[in-house]
Every structure is written in C-alpha cells, then in structure tokens.
Length: 275
Image (cartoon, rainbow, N blue to C red; front, side, top):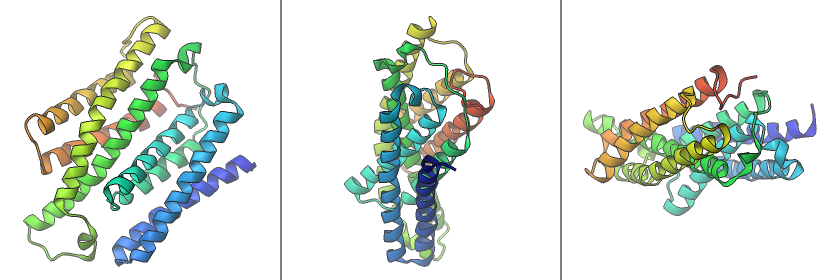
C-alpha cells in the first residue's frame, strides 16, 4: 500500500464522512452536523485538487492516458461546480447529491484499474481539451439539475397530497429555488454539452479520419443530446417550469450515469475504461 493510495483513501474517507454527516444532519435537523459535513467536503475537495495537480505535474503525458484520471476529474468537476453554486446562490441542499456522487466517482477511479488509453498525439490538442472540459462541466450541471429535480418532485408530491411537513421536508428549499437551479443548469449545460460533442467529433475526424464511427458511446451521446436539446427548447422557448423539467433533467442525468457505467466499462468503445 503506497503513499499515493493512502492519500486517495483519505480523500475518499472525507467524502464518505461528509456524505454520512450531511444526511444525518438533515434527518436530525442538526445545523452543526451539516456545517461539519460541508467543512470536510471542502477539505476533501482541496486535497482532491492537490491530488490531480500532483499527478499532472509528475507525468502529464502518462496521466493523460489513464482512464482513472478522467473518472477522478469528473468527480472533481461535479464537486467544484456544487461549491460554486453554494457560494454564489447560497443553496446548500444540493450537498445531498453532490457529496455521494463525488464519493462514488472518486472511489471508482481508485478501484477500477483500467489500462492505458490509446491516445494519439493530437490528444493534447485544443479539441480534445475542449471536448473533455465542456462535457464534464455539462454533466456536473446535469447532476445539479438532478439534485434540484429530485428535491422539487419530493416537495411537490407532499404539497399536492397535503401531508404533514416532516423534519426532512422542512429542511428542503422552496420549490422556486429548486426550479431556479434547474433553469440555471439547463441554460448553461446544453450549450456546453453541444460544444463538447462538436469538439469531440472534430477531434475524431482529425485523429481517426472520420467524425462519427457508430461507436456505442457516440450513439448514447447523440441520444442524450437530442433529449437535452428538447429540454433546453421547452425550458427556454416555451417556458417550461416545475415538474416537467425537473423530471426530464433527472432522467437525463441517470442516462448519463448509465452511459458511463455500462458503455465505458462493459462495452467495446473508443472511450473504454475496461480492465
């Protein structure tokens, strides 16, 4: 067991404790527990940032060929975006989904021993960097929309059925705030997802001589893009609010997770993380 593994284990432990304590704080209505959880989450994010930076600084070419690095980077992006939302909008409840998702993704990056990716020299070029960055931020935004959507549907159901407000529900934000996060995530997320897709196709055309190769990941991404485009159009052009965008955004994020978990790890694809 080397020092790098122990360092990563410490980060995963911080994410785990933050997830458990925040849920306990919500269930128990304990503000202090939630504050401690957010402190540990922030510390985990700082160490996670250091971990990524040290790996890149030590051997950037080798690190860029490791599938684990990209899974870890996705976890970092998701959590970083949550912290930005928390700081800018003062919306804390998204930690209920951000912390566990960061834990799952970061732990996966430690446990999955993927082979080196076959990446040509063009990998480090502009299009690949844009492809990865834009898609990761858009997926992180979808994760925020997922958290807000689940919260919206939960509160909306209880209001509609006129149930007695539980301690958990009292801790949740108003429906308007959940819808606000959804609008923000969809408005920014879809253009970024589109940019990421286009950059990926351009990079593939330069690298493999064809922009589209009927790869399972490409097919899944196109399907997600069409659904995302529909949500973006309905939300911004037709003024969708409330349950419909909350439901569709939640399913879109689940579809992204299934695409990552099933296609990247179990199917033959250019984006494979299979051992």
